[in-house]
Amino acid sequence: MIKDKNFIVGIGAGMIIGAILLQLSLIGERASKPMSEQALRRAADQAGFDLVARGNVANELSLQGQKDTANVSEHKRAADSKAVSSGTAVSSSEDSKVTKGNASATGQPNKQPALPTDATKPSAKDKVSSVKQSETSQITVKVAAQSGSSEVAAQLAKAGVVASADAFEGFIFKHKKQRKLRTGTFVFNVPAEMADVLEIITSHPNG
Image (cartoon, one colour):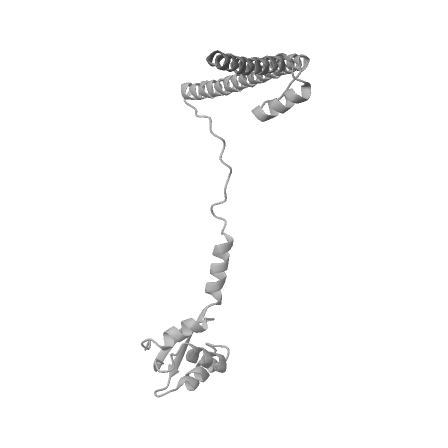
């Protein structure tokens, strides 16, 4: 009975081992079989790579080499151009130094001749100032005591100090100076602005 049991266990173990070996052989055959192009592309996409044919790899390497050569040549040309421009600048600086040295040796500095100017010719501003001074005159006005804003404006307009009595009276009220008007004798330069006239009439009398 025991011998039969061992025999059955041995047969079962052999069957299990045989199944395992069969699976391993199948896996080996699958691994040794070459992958198709679609499977390779799928695996490359999953790994984050680009699938390139052998001939295309050589072409890409050749194009990259040509680009690198072109970049090196361009950098070399730029460096040569920069060196030439810097040499020209140094030459110009040396020429200017030579010119300055010649001027100092001869004792005659290289100066541009000054343009002649007419110092006695009056400017336009001076002409306007002289015209204003000739056109300005003085008017003396005596403001009677206890004169209000309307009487003061009327006297100034009558004397020709201001153009309009009503306009000057409105100007007085606009600046709230009706209570600060003074009396006495005042001297005005005409023509004059209403602000200047108001400043004089609200200050101490001139005499």
